[in-house]
Image 1 (cartoon, rainbow over the protein chains, first blue to last red):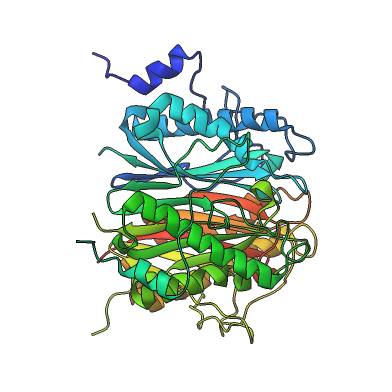
Image 2: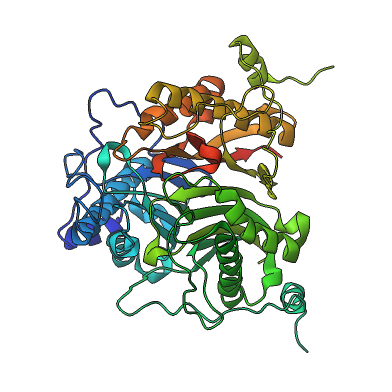
Length: 164
Length: 164
Length: 164
């Protein structure tokens, strides 16, 4: 009998699906865990947007220059899917996340760009839609970086509380 | 009978007061919690400096260009007041903070600017003065960002331990 | 009888040694704890690379401009030694670290530089070599900053689980 998986069912109902593991470009070495679990906490590494097959998703570059705010919003939403996919692989079920705690949203920013919150809302909106206000609520920063790996427009790290 | 509120009394004695909630500019959507409480932890979102009425406080721009180090120090001190105000609203009393743990101080930095610690000291000095060395002590980073929301000169996020 | 200190013995066997406390440049005020311990957690402040005598180690500047990726890798490896030295002073023994949890790797980045992971690998590689996959594994971000204190090429903050 399949385990109830409420969050994943909600994802499917929204027409979304989880992504395959990141296909790091040749020569790129990532000697760390995408999700580090300890007790009732899962620490989530910085993730970027991927396609469903795990290939990093463009457009690449700085928001405010090569990438628009709307494209940045979509990249942040895709990053949420990428993170949920890592959590599913590590935890077995997305329902084990009992509370989102901290979200650190990093936006590759052109000089003078100052709309980082409008970009990272793509992440927060999806997490809140999936988990609801009580479980999905989170503390957040949305800030401008001078560069991100592989010219990703967005990278997000987070911390969540999990059921044992 | 009023509850003892030692920290707030100390603030008042210093001639300082808590601020009204952030008045976000029209059209800015912030779908997250300024403080996320879970168990004995409060996760504090990135905050910027505000005036007592909750309006964001200038000067705006990059420290090392439009904003001086001294102005940046004042902005970091105001950001401490803004964070304390959010904590008061969420926790009921600032005395519930039993230990400051982690402070991440972000300075909107002009190219070549490298005095981020002198800026974020405006935050650390006030927290240590209010809470003392034992409760107020914290791990800290003070680093340079390529941009911050609304061209804030400083944004600070933090994590504290709280009494239930 | 000396306490077993497995990790430090491994360091010595690798020809490495712990460093003296940071000698902050004259006039630089750092009113915070390099390591903040609370319960089973140690929060580690942003650290940069130092020489064994505690003096900050160059080269200084932005990776991708004044500093090469290889030099950045070495700076991240030195930063690991600096952090281990702070942990040793605070905890008494490096063996008290039961799990690395979160590593936030900040690279002072020239415009367009996007190989931050290759730099921060200098940190992760040493921690994993010393602590092994189970204890040393960590969630990580490796991202580009617009500036760092004193033009450090790398600054790293972290969180670890410790034995009481």
